[in-house]
Length: 472
Ligand code: FAD
Ligand code: NAD
Figure 1 (tube, rainbow, N blue to C red):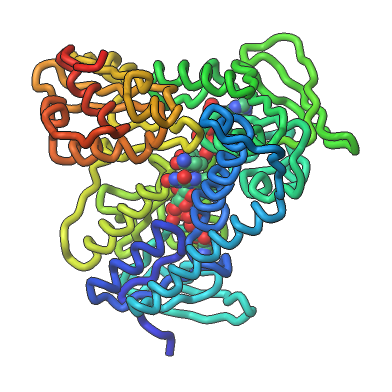
Figure 2 (spheres, rainbow, N blue to C red; figure 1 turned 60 degrees about the vertical axis):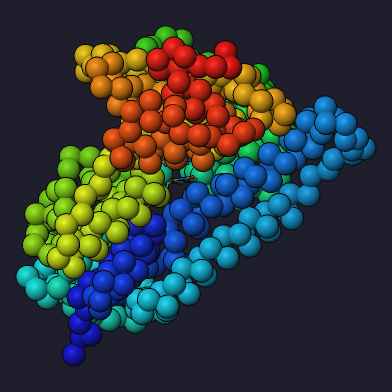
């Protein structure tokens, strides 16, 4: 007899593992099927965590090379030990992924190592077939199935990935030597983060972007200033340009570029090419069509605000349902979905989910951009404060960037916040909390911020919504 669960989650990434833990906490008998051989999904294994480990290491390398002298610290020779840097990254990943296994045991979630498939959609007792990692066929039944199978790199026609010369983010996290030159296709989050890592370690990095701007969904002012900052750091940009062909050879890869709007082709050589033009939902072999689950025309699983697909008892969360492809969005959906399965109500405020780019300085945005507010015809006031006027940023020697808060002109309610600056990703969280509680800019401005802190720039930007900042 097949073992029966209340909930089977397919996929053990930030959406799936968090959903499984929360479901178990709520007393549901829960299993999670994962085929990677490790829990944590894209994020912990080949995404957020290894990229942040390398961003941190390469940042320290750059600081030692370029910033220590200004602090009166003389270093005679800074040398890169890439194998140690990579080994540290592997260790960081392992600590995190094994930590999730421990949490599964603690919460009594059954971890099924294998590839899951919906074999039969049957109300109240869906059948899940699993091909285990050691080759066995097993079957389980569950009242509820949660699809949390995540996403994969979107391929680019004419550019064949080999994960050596032409890589996705996964290959870019594992290069065994610093390439002399790297072309990054796509000036989005992965392109700028991984491009920064390899530029800091010594590669000449050129970013080719189809649109005329970098970081397309971000606030316009942020996009422009961030491009200038990255250019000052040595990153080159070819905007409004598309790659039509990539020919790998012994000496490197020859790329054919064309203006996005049409025009004469040219070539560009690179030792390594990173393809980072977005990610697409991953649903291969899941048996969704056979189970009658409706997908969107872009291949995402279609789910309503309660994560319910059109098939009763089959739910979906995380990257596979679209929206912002972020680990914390997937996690919150995991929690909300588990709570809904246990009979509670839950909802997610998608307007208060911050997006962070972990370059240096960092970029963070939440809520509406100025462009979105203008397009929607919403009257707003903008308060801005530069880090060059923040005493802690000066003491640290990190004065690039600003905080901008956008508030409703009539009610003063915070509608958005956009930051370029040191620790922008952490700084924006007080605005996220404020937005969750419906804060006005005045509420942030009147909150006493410890001195000397980078967060005082957030307070000053909030003060400046009413044009009454103190320090500029
Ligand atoms: P995933 O994490 O993709 O997990 C899905 C899991 O399901 C995978 O482990 C997969 O192997 C498994 N699976 C698929 N099909 C099956 C099956 N049939 N049976 C069993 N298992 C299956 N987001 C951030 O918020 N912050 C960051 O700093 C950040 N950095 C990133 C850096 C990189 C390089 C990349 C690529 C992504 C980054 N992201 C970041 C995005 C983040 O990784 C994703 O948004 C997040 O992992 C989505 O979680 P998920 O649970 O929906 O899917
Ligand atoms: P992205 O959507 O952030 O950026 C893709 C970029 O490629 C865009 O600027 C787009 O205009 C451009 N592009 C698309 N087609 C192109 C083409 N043919 N030629 C040139 N440029 C082209 O995607 P990504 O950087 O691949 O990241 C994928 C997902 O992973 C994102 O949704 C992101 O949220 C997530 N992620 C998040 C973080 C983070 O939160 N710090 C880090 C890495 C990845």
